[in-house]
Image 1 (cartoon, helix red, strand yellow):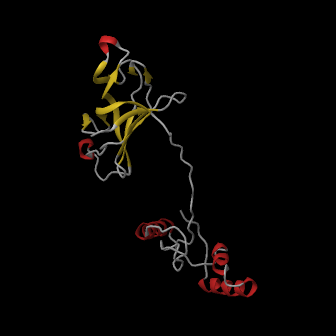
Image 2 (cartoon, rainbow, N blue to C red):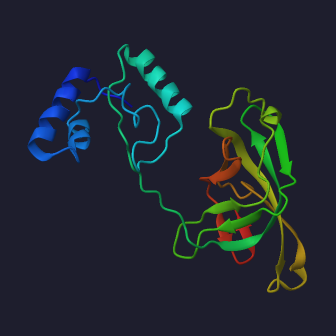
Image 3 (spheres, rainbow, N blue to C red):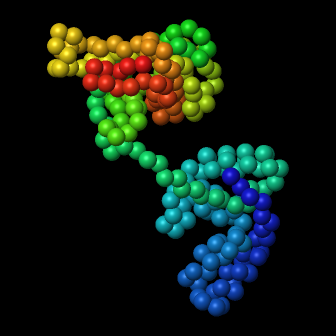
Length: 221
């Protein structure tokens, strides 16, 4: 994200010279950079290089962002804007069992079964939070060709969750419980099915929305 600002490189040099005269060389560059007089193409921090003890950025990614910004706005990129976003994550989830498979009504038609999660766990938000299923760990990589998705975005919608199977032990269900693969069909009771999403960069499957509840007996929808 950039904002247009006209910069004059010699202005930065004059600023540094003036600040050095007034307060010494220790903070001249910092003062003038903060004042917006530095040319981003000459500033190591804006080129994605390490400046002093600053954080190293990805030079190729930064340069690509600059080029895209200039093409979009029709003018030189002249300011780097750093944005910090607070993201909430649960410290603890409760475990439902080992995820075996999920069946998805593909957004492009048909039903796709995902399996081979290799140790992924099906988990849920702690008591006191709204019902929310999570898939944690294991191998969550997805062949997007099965969903007829070419040139994927970083985040893609795969479709609706129709069926989920997980392995666990339920001691409280009598003859209907014990050690087994448990299967729940979503939407059977008229509830809205959850949407399944995919983070193609981090290879993570997400379960979004839906009208399901999580009861001692299992997942109800």
